[in-house]
Image (cartoon, rainbow, N blue to C red):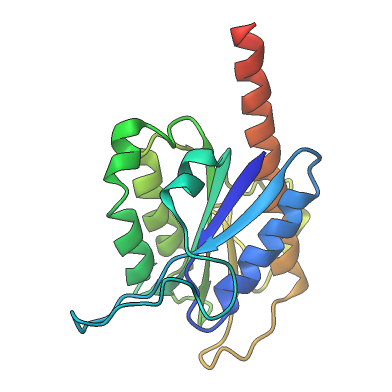
Length: 203
């Protein structure tokens, strides 16, 4: 069962979070992480992104959304909101919304900022809104995760996060990686439990 981890990352910090969430997903028997990204957008109307990224995961396709059992959505913070490439992608998921292809599936969110108070929680909340419109079931981080109470860096009950520093020089801290992996595990377990429940009801 695939858990789609979809993100945009400009300097690599959000990508690192995505990779730790993937580790958490892969710890759940029967679950597999599917890493995907979105292309950048340009202010120049004639500019186009290459069909395949130079490095890292491939760009997301409609089939990835249809086939996933759960979704983790990640973006760096831009003035307390998700970055334009992620918003641009989400704004073009009308067909998935009409088809209900994400309805009833669990979802989680994650972000990275340059500073401690750079808008992490508002960005996480901004990414939740379109997921609610798609009918997804939001999964956060409970305070039963010890790192959530102890962290002095990133981490939020709304989702995983990382404080990367203004120059993107701060490495991920242990609390941040633990919480990202815990979020991936929780998302995958929720997806499997929902799938098992649906199968039981159809028997």
